[in-house]
Amino acid sequence: MTTLQSPAEEARQILGALGVDLGRLGATGLPARSPIDGAVIGHLADSDARAVDRAVGRAAEAARAWRDVPAPKRGELVRLFGEELRAAKEPLGRLVTLEVGKILSEGLGEVQEMIDVCDFAVGLSRQLYGLTIATERPDHRMSESWRPLGVVGVISAFNFPVAVWAWNAALALVCGNAVVWKPSEKTPLTALAVDALLARALARFRAAGGDAPEGLAATLIGGRAAGEALVDDARVALISATGSTAMGRAVAPRLAARFAKALLELGGNNAAIVCPSADLDLTLRAVAFAAMGTAGQRCTTLRRLFVHDAVYDAFVSRLAKAYGSVAIGDPRDPKTLVGPLIDEAAAGGMARALDAASGLGGRVTGGERLPGPGVYVRPALVELPRQEGPMLEETFAPILYVVRIADLDAAIALNNAAAQGLSSSIFTNDLREAELFLSDRGSDCGIANVNIGPSGAEIGGAFGGEKETGGGRESGSDAWKAYMRRATNTVNWSRSLPLAQGVRFDV
Ligand code: UN1
Image 1 (cartoon, rainbow, N blue to C red):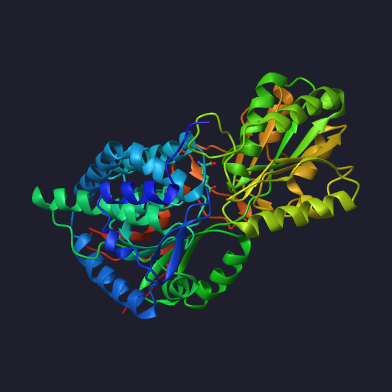
Image 2: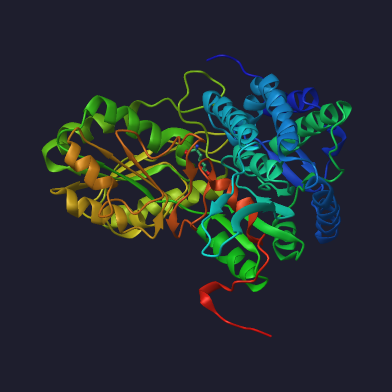
């Protein structure tokens, strides 16, 4: 085993190198920890409602100036930010690993996802297309155009502490908005690092004559009170919130009460179906990554597996071997595939779910607690006689429930029986099965894949899901429209006033 530096020491070094003022790390306030050993890296001041009020006030003013900057010029700021991310990919990726506990290749992948969405947003900054619409009236022109919303609030979760903010911020900024971010209180340090990198991009943008107002992008370190103040602030036009369904249930009615826009990215209880014709080597690798990767802490993590009777015994025994042998430990060690859970509460949730599954006749492989410091567990494979109990709940931990199936229609019904509808997969080489899964009668999720696991989406597609996942879509495709308001514009360039629908009103 390679000797590695203490996570706290290494995190401080990286923060300093990335331009974060280490003076912000004090002895009181919100603790920032590394799950690698559970040690506190430092404490940060907790933003109160007044701090939120000030940041939103500045952002509202900034948004009024930023909307006057042409969109392709706004894209230039995001391009510069993408350059900063490219230059800092290695240390920032390592900081993600230190603060979240995901393995280094996933930490780097998270930064790559930020770079990708910046590139996407830069292209988009010249493509915020509206429509020209046929009008029934002569010498009239009808069109649709897209305008900035103003202030966009982003509330993000610990598991993708910086990428999810980037999906939102890169798009929101090219769309002409100011952004106020409340990162998870479990991951404030990566947020501060990203904030420092954005400050560098802003400085370069201004030095080149760009007009970026103060307060355009604010980062508020804080807990629930700060999040609530952001959600309730009438000047915030859209809240994009990523987290649990419980969080969404608390946020959505508050936004509805003030008719604000909501972009919700909530829980997932993602499934995959393994059919008799599946390439089992490929399926094994896909299932292992989707279920055990990020220690089961992605919203797209594979949690439910339906395996056809014809391949069940052969496949599940191989899978059990993989669960027994996967390397667990310090995520900085290149041999490690599964790092720590974020905190003790996550291990508690996992243990409770496994107990409940055993009570239902589940056969559990793995799942045991490993020695710390830090919360390390062996991922668990749970063979259940039928889908019930904890299998229908999202436990944010590496538990994969497996159920034997005899027919595809029944498996699709089981896939769709979850309360959430984020991501789903089928493993098959049968065209008819694949197309059925993707059809109207198939998966009801926002993401449906063939011969790929449910996690690890690229930013080019719209990301999000249905039902208790919240319905929001982020990153690619036309997700940008969520950050703008649509205006339908009709221009009469004739000398008369024909009314629509043939209505007469002659005064
Ligand atoms: C999340 O877990 O909140 O598809 C986001 C994926 C990643 C994003 C996950 N691109 O797994």
